[in-house]
View 1 (cartoon, helix red, strand yellow):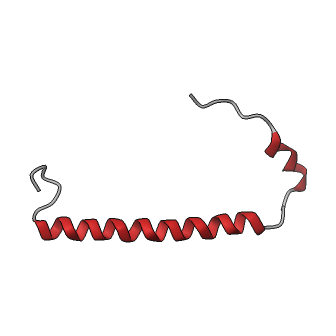
View 2 (cartoon, helix red, strand yellow):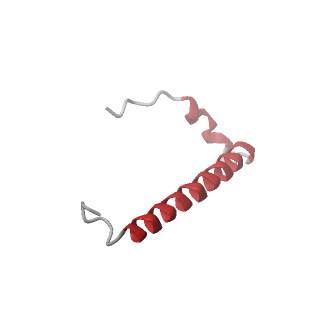
Length: 59
C-alpha cells in the first residue's frame, strides 16, 4: 500500500490470491504441455536431425 500498488490491504490480499491462483494454473498447464510434447508423434521426421544441432549462446 505504501508504494501505491494497492488501494487497501484487502485489495493487496485479493491481488496476492489472484497471483497465486494464476501461478498454480500455469504450472498445471505447463505440465500438460510437457506431457503432450513427450508423447506426441513426430509430424515432420525430416526435421528430427535439427534437434541435435548446436545452438549459439544467447548471451
